[in-house]
Length: 184
Image (cartoon, helix red, strand yellow):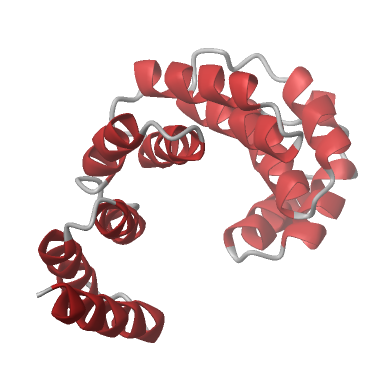
């Protein structure tokens, strides 16, 4: 029994999510620890099994955990419920002010509604978190392009490249430099 759960944990850690879910399911959601239930819900979401993720989250008493609310926000986004996603991301940030995923999510929501200043606020905050720095820098560059602030966009993209962003960002930077040259 413990070996099967440990195997589920290992599969989850290695990204073998379908196998992790199978191992966890052998024990039933109610017998899993809170952390394993959250792992299971996250795996279901990654496998696009939203209803099972919701059922698993509903069985978890984790309202005081940021991760729980991040997962709830993912469910809400997959169901196109922006208000629920916003509320979940805000709660996640209340519990963990450094929750980069929540900052990015709120930034994207504000971007979608045209609130560029609010989007920039959240992307700027997310750019200070190691796990979301690159994505936030690219989002900030895109905001700068939207505002025709090409020098700022170039600076953000160069920083992203210095921090390990790939060739796609390099190509984007080249296009922005050409665009900036046209504006001069």
